[in-house]
Each structure stands twice: as structure tokens, then as C-alpha cells.
Length: 114
Image 1: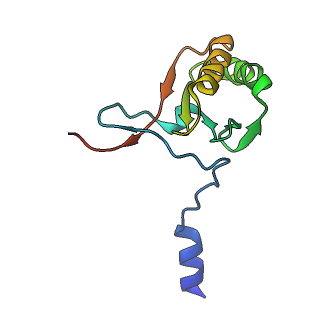
Image 2 (image 1 turned 90 degrees about the vertical axis):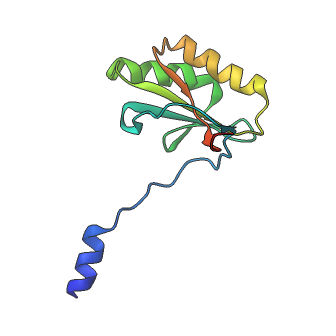
């Protein structure tokens, strides 16, 4: 019983991601703190989610503006699937711009240096 309590109290549960996204790779970049960012996921079929909740494309700018009004120090971390057409990513970026987001990060997978 003590082992069960120990493992339950020390286990870290990872939240389920809203979309399965395969990020494009990069050999250089900077790290950011996930706690200080709104994670915007763009799935392979153009679906959009914030952190763990799906958001219709036409509401992306409005929802982002509300979140940034509540906490202006947040940055936007965009996770776009490598298979998403650039036009879809550009549309999301237009919505981010419409929300007047001060900081936007385009995230990638690390592929090591060449």
C-alpha cells in the first residue's frame, strides 16, 4: 500500500495534446518557457487548437486577443505540422497579428547541427 501511495504521489502526468503534429526540423534555435506561452497547434488538415482545446479558424484572433488581454506578457508558440500548406499557416499568423500578439515563436523539432 505504501508503494502504491508513493508512486501515485511522485508520478507526473502529461496532459494529452489536442492535435497530433509532426513539426518541421531545424538545426539552430532558442528555447522558451512553455509556462509563459499560449501553444497554438495547427494540425495536418488545418485544424487549430490552443493548448488542449480546439478553436475554429475564424475565432483564432478573437480568442487570442481575450487571452492576451488577461495576461499581456504571454507569447504565442506556433506548432504547425510539416504537412500543412503554407497558406494555412499564413492564415493563422494573420489571426495572430489581428490579436496584436507582441511575441510569436515558430517551433520546430531539433535535428542537431550539421
